[in-house]
Image 1: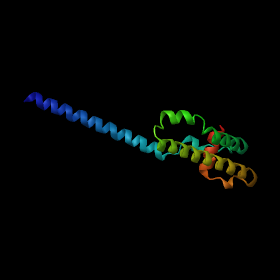
Image 2: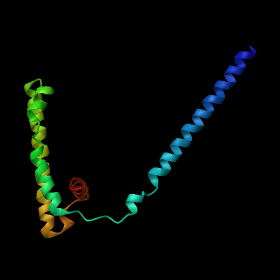
Image 3: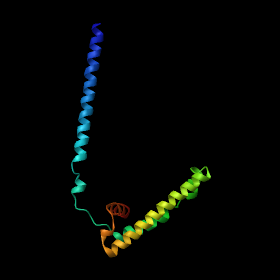
Image 4: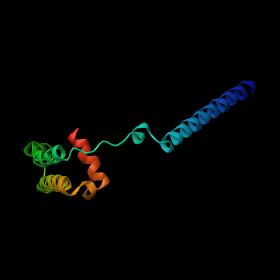
Length: 126
């Protein structure tokens, strides 16, 4: 009887320690998500619009590379093949539109670009 109380006590202490650790980890994660990051404090570099527009145009064409291989591996049915083509067409169109907006931004200023457009253009031009 004495041994079972000791085991229960150790289990209780161990589970309390685990719970305290989880609470500490959660507190650190919450603190990190609410504090401003170093990257957000740095001045934002302007997007290289010419390079980004060219890169987006190139990527809109590169979307189709490997299409036949993808169809062979994944597209076992005609419906899947059609979905693969539709998805690639949509991706290509989005990248082409992004390239067009970047071209417009060169002449009209970056105000025509959304924050998302700027992030994507900056990412693909790096």
